[in-house]
Length: 155
Image 1 (cartoon, rainbow, N blue to C red):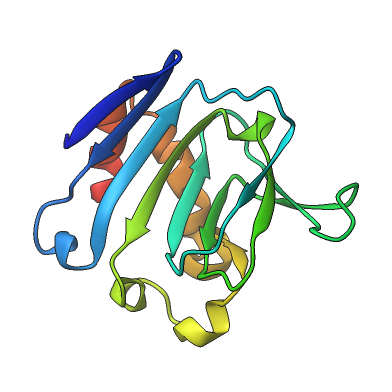
Image 2 (cartoon, helix red, strand yellow; image 1 turned 90 degrees about the horizontal axis):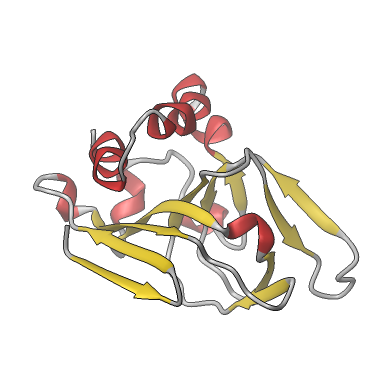
């Protein structure tokens, strides 16, 4: 593992994959115990693309930026495309996550749609990877430790 830090009882870990995966994936990340005094949080656009898996519940919620009482309920395993605008997330459902942060251009090796079609999109992994995308969350949850979960993700 590359680094670990604790923020007020929050565990944050990073794991650098081995070659040849490291050519496409910058890092795997994991956090546990993320709690905030606020219910919603803005995620600013940075052009990155990630896979995000909720380890607590099989759901993620993204709120409408104009009408914050409305939200889109997604599966607990998603691909988050590059952003041209901020997103609003539910902090309570984000308490335990694992993810993949792709290198620029690295995502094309794993997803069929061109990057231009992924702009501002959150898509279930099942939509992109079929049954293996639907199963990945369960396989990762079988790992008893963050390291085991990283290694499952890496495979």
